[in-house]
Amino acid sequence: MEFDELVQAVQSLNAEDTFRARLDIAQWRSLGGYLTQHPLRAGELLLRQGEVDRSAYFLGQGSLQVYSDEAAGAGGSRVVLLRPGALVGETGLFAAVPHTANVEAMSACVVWALRLPRFEELCSRMPALALEVLRGAGGVMAARLRAHLMRQAALA
Image (cartoon, rainbow, N blue to C red; front, side, top):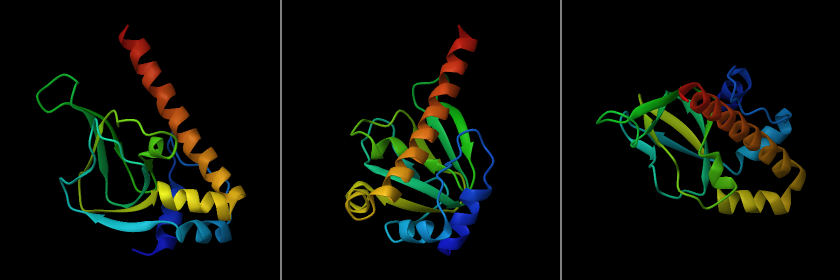
């Protein structure tokens, strides 16, 4: 998968929790130098609930399901299905806290990882770009928190 395909997927995704960083193509290309591409097989876990992973992942191809082990039913409960362009694991850029859900490949996938050491390098070399990435990731977290709180309120 080419990096330009990832950029197109991110820019065309239309969801409440879309990564909406204001990056031009040159900034995207600079950011691409800090990402590493990883294939996933269907059924493979990208993130495991309860574990700490200091990386954020952009989904380039395929679909991922996010589910919780603690929800009703033996297999847990699916929270959401993510499509290409989605950002997942964004909390890893902000804090060393355990993930609250599993993220599993529903099909063969390609993800692009932004690992914390590389993000810290980006911060020192291109602080304006790093700040915009944080704004975008923070927006994703805020949208997901809002959706979670609305679901909880609906159940109450």
